[in-house]
Image 1 (tube, rainbow, N blue to C red):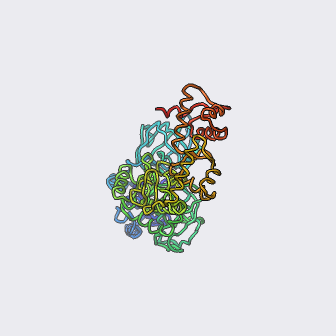
Image 2 (image 1 turned 45 degrees about the vertical axis):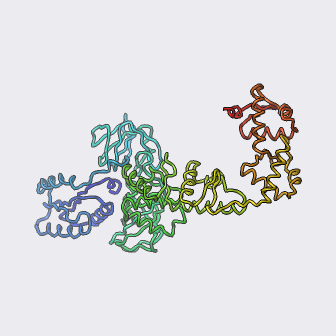
Image 3 (image 1 turned 60 degrees about the horizontal axis):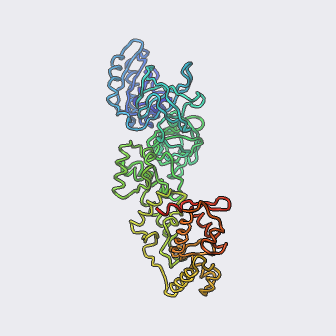
Length: 572
């Protein structure tokens, strides 16, 4: 019964008048109620086997009492006899009115179908059946099999035995699939458009325990979870309290033993592991929870807002719950249960309210501003340490600071985040450097005098300046202070570090490049000796300079000579 009930919009609850309400009647009604079936009607059948009319009325009263508080409360209760035909006309008339009570199917959402049968037909191959939950799909279209995320092509479609070109939400359908064996797809799998479902072993849900369950549900109880046409084993992790009493509802995390695919709003049923008794059911609130430990203490409050809030509150909570990972636009639709049009409006509103930021326009990746502030605080600590270590520097370059986020964000996303943090005043930017707003470089006059003397010594050396050891001796600096001075000068672009112990001023490098570029205009390549003679420098200086140019892709080494690379473009 559970495998096919997921796609139902209305039910016909049948009760035998000569037997009355049976245990399976109660269970089936409970299941339909938990799955939020929209509407239906009740039929008392086999009335021809009841001799007294009073017995039919007693059965009717028993059923009416059973229906109180359910989706069928107040529904028509008809008496029929298939044998005599009594009441059948009225039943047909009442059934014909049911479609008017059913909400329109979700045609705007991506295509989705729970597979409840898989078989082969001679001459056709693999065929699966199910009810289309949402969207539309056409013949020859490619879709995905979930949770395997396997591509399949639709060779043919049928609706109630009739070949069709497309199937829509609400229709019972058969799909002839190409490129997949019957054994590779089975009951419980889903067919859907790409990027329309999330796979997970965890589900954050709202679980209601039935009133007639004999004992409270304990934490970590092993259960059977029915989601669509799939049944998996798992354990209950209560997010509120240690037990769940009969008739109560609570936030729960389902920790499953098999991978499932889902989206916000999916309904599910929970049955006991053994014996198989229906315990309750509910709704999926988060189909793939974040594993961030930081959110654990506020998870229940956030999930409650996610469940009871309107579309805008739900949209904000979805992005917040994904922490610094954020969500893409396609994932946002899955996590909110909104259509593409609704999602676009919700995201635009959140951006206009400055609650979220789009850090990547191509994929539509969104982060909540509170988590961006967290990122800013982390980078502030990085900058604070940098300012303490290098008080004379203007700050860190974008690449240096952005490198701290490279494991989580792309280069473009880092750029967008840094621009936002500068815009809100957390950082300041001076040319190529980013610093804390209160940072002021400390450059004492004596230090500036030493640096000026250093630059003059290097400049006076021409194309063969002093190496570090002799340079520091001339400046009267120990190695630690001298290294700090040279690193600071290289960081501020006042020196160019060519080798570990060799620095030039930028004007010298520019002059050398110009000489080398002119040489290449008349010669196809250059050796170390030729370069040494060109600049009238030592062999060691020549080697260091050529290796530096190789690292900058200005030249390319081939055997024992260099050929021009990017250096030729510098003339343009």
